Length: 358
Image (cartoon, rainbow, N blue to C red; front, side, top):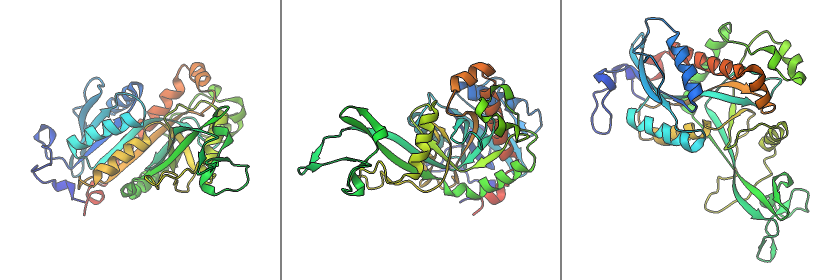
């Protein structure tokens, strides 16, 4: 990696620096929802210190500002997506990355807890790891291959692990959803995340807390046992669906450890069923797409360290609508405020010289 305190003059495929300023580093912040963008901008504007410059008076889908670090100005470019989901995440991240050749990409926004008693409303998750789980085929349960049943249920006599079907994936009387598993890690940001977690956890008084009244009754004891918010690091699960079902949440957790299910190998895609071991903390809709885009493009962009995800927990993957209504969306606001504050603190605490040095 290059020492970006001395970024070379642009040539060849390197884009010209915005405003003609030689930046110490360039950071792209990816945000999916307008409400997330609005809150991030508000937290940024409220900074009121001399280190943040050229912050626009109102949020837009894309905008830039400068953070003045000890080694020079850092360009912060906000890339709003045109919609939710991994496809829009790939498109928006690719657009910003190929345009700016950033040193780091940060996805900021909301997520749903997969462990309500531990990963609580308002908590913040830091991650550079995402798993993807999505249906990719509706298959006929009675399908044959060379005269034999192509698929079998998990409680059927053993016919080979590659043919297992989970009964919970039943779609109609004679068909079922077949699922695909993938994962992505941005290993270049491991040290950055370790430092960020340590720095953020040193003082958690900056974290806002959701109103106790909006916490579902069955989790109130766990919430009252803790005095404030918490920072978590680990895997995120990217889904193409909004999860608002305790039953489906528990199903996802079971899938994470039941690696013998959903294995339908194809010779063209030998990695389709592989998932790396590791507890999944929360679910969102963009983390896999952002990290996948960054890691794919990073090969051709020499200065890019990688990507990280900062998620504020806005729901527990159950009673989502009720929680939003009961709090007047205050829970979502607190969650994205905490994620935004954490992101700015990560940027402000970066040692840009050592982080981007060769």
